[in-house]
Image (spheres, rainbow, N blue to C red):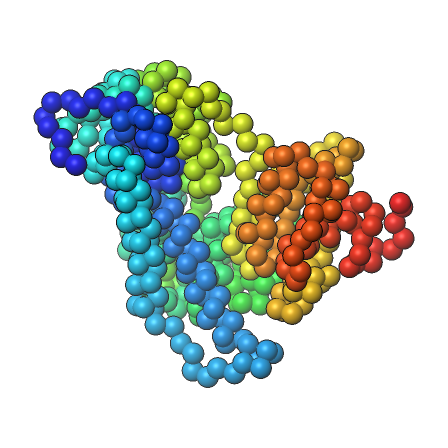
Length: 456
């Protein structure tokens, strides 16, 4: 879109074309608003181009390669399997490009005007876009996302890269050090270990320390089997470019250093000081239940509006903000935001496993026929419930956890009971039966696992 030198007036301006921003723009356009979406890089944002989609694409390739090399137990013998890193890179780029083109098509089809450039608020009703172009609006949505946090002494450049750089490599590094112990570090570490890299993870405390210790233990055991070296209780103190020194006195020689210590909300250059928008003490934009900021004309969604910093939360908030901007009485009142770690085995969580009066029952994947058939018995399902037998939380560790957790989120949102889950017929043979079996066990009527004599 080419805009004239005079201000153009629109009903809604959306700043940021990531998964939250483009969803908000499309939903508002569906409701009849004139919408301009401003994106300075690529439609789809980090999720489609640098994070969610690329990482899961590469994880799938790494899993496939690893399984091919270790399929002897199934009677499959492969010799000389190798990775073509350039072809892998091309596929990863192609996937993102296809999705980006898809978003562009959807925006065009819904009448959303897309402007390439950076946007700065001049006031609560006007934006300045790259090259001095101005845009007047009635409402605006900030959807600028987040950016990788830097680490003093390990500034990005050369062989020191962030998670985006790790997912943009067109080669398989011989060795890699990852500073950080979050799910991002675990996913990248296990991915490259399966592709043949020597991987070191430097963890101030331990990997996945904020998650259920039983779940984390299974992942840590698998990491050890893959040869991933976790340096627990250590900090990276300095580097020489080809080596990293640790607070423990150890020195690691590596080809690539990945800094994955967290994300920070992206508000740089937005000109928020020219509006009534306020930030909290962590730098997130403050919003109410309709995602409206302290400026009555401006909404904020996704990572920039606070934890959890997850793409699917941004998508839901995009719908809500788009509707609210159009005058509907929409609110972000979701009870639960599920989370998935694409580790091996996967970990997926919805709701809580803790709280007064909450009880938890665990069902192991060793009781599931499909898990045994596929050699994927490592894992379990935990289901948490209150005194009235309402489902309050579910944790799934194992194959296909990413898909199964949606059932748990729906159950919690709808106020389902253990009986609702247990009495719903789940297809056989599938991993989803483990959720049903966990509910059965919580009701004191387990079938495919013996817990001992249970009170009826």
